[in-house]
Length: 336
Image 1: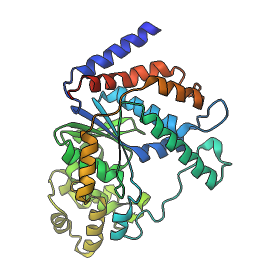
Image 2: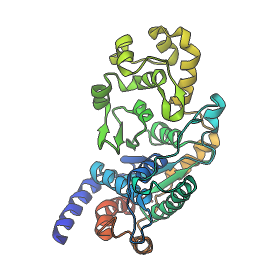
Image 3: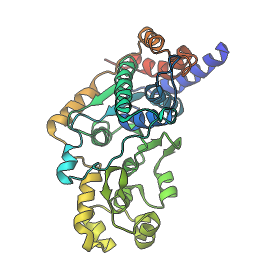
Image 4: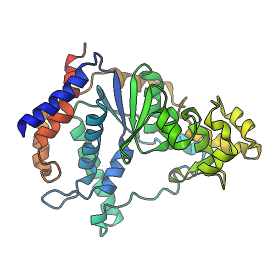
């Protein structure tokens, strides 16, 4: 069994060490999106019966993506405090009707306050785990993770291969020859060809589909009666014509009567040129340019014991070795 694990690890390390640069291939993780999904979906508990599905489910899901995509660097981005303020200035109803995350199905007896405490406890502990892994953590006050991820993708690491890990369809507008989106729910990597195959349009035009369709999860209303099939039928140009701006789209679609709504939605949803301050951009740049933290196994093993997670991760040492050792080696070999 140990020989088998050693062979797997050797294969992973060989694939990663063929890259000469830390920033050759970045896995950018939408932190809160993935945590809430894990917290809701995973009923995992420790031996004391305490729910740990959020933090452990997050680590396992990210670990699976690392072992599948073989990035040279892992950057995890969380919403900053007050991150929704900019969009609420554009539209007061932004995220206004968002429902609380669905409770883990084994814990339906939990009340709302216990839900909040469970999430708070687990996300704080998750940050402690991440601080001892070969990871860069980015959280900027008053900036949503979507904007931070987009700015890193389009500006800070514009020459790197990027894989964005999120179930948020808004990121599909960033897909290009260099950028792809990993869906943690579908276990699918969306490159430009998969986007075109599934949505029947150019990835460059995904933003226009999104502003017409709207986003119920963010309480952004679209144009009534226009879902994907209708949009493709009424606007076939989205399949093969790269629309360069919102004005061109409104003119070609004939949506003059909905111009105000579409322009508002575009300001809320577009990620190609994010509206964040110069100081925020500078902070993002400084964090990304810093060397990531290193893998600290003894601290992680101590935390595993404290949290009694053996039922969730049966062999933590092998899991750490297979998943994070190769990333740590890339950091170790990176020039100062």
